[in-house]
Image (cartoon, rainbow, N blue to C red; front, side, top):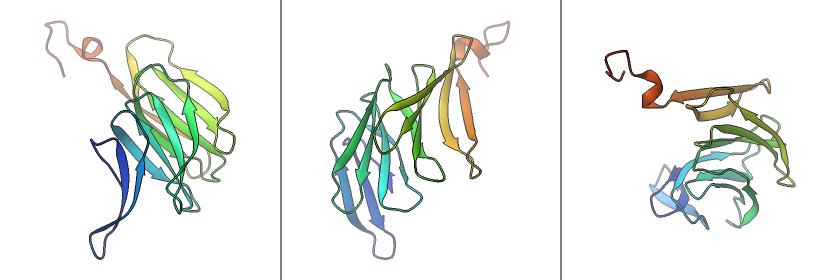
Length: 146
């Protein structure tokens, strides 16, 4: 699976280096893509501020997850496939119902300047979140960025 600058995600058959599915519909570059645990769905995260859940077989959008106010960095299914987690440059991580697309919960860091770079569920169902700091937050007292 790959995400491309042409606003699509694509599935490759590695043995023959062939594209077997193209997921097209985002209005911005696709940043991340992940399979559901059963392999029947794909979730994509885009610069268009949405995530989409796709049916692998038909390559059609099942649900559009809307609510972020900035570009998405990642999207992933929970181990049971019932939830999706998204991370965005809007400084939030959101948990969604994968069947209905309903928003379940918004997680926001208490301090400005901390942006989630990636979010995914641990195999036991607990959420793990990786963060990146804005450059202004990590510059030392001399202004050097690390």
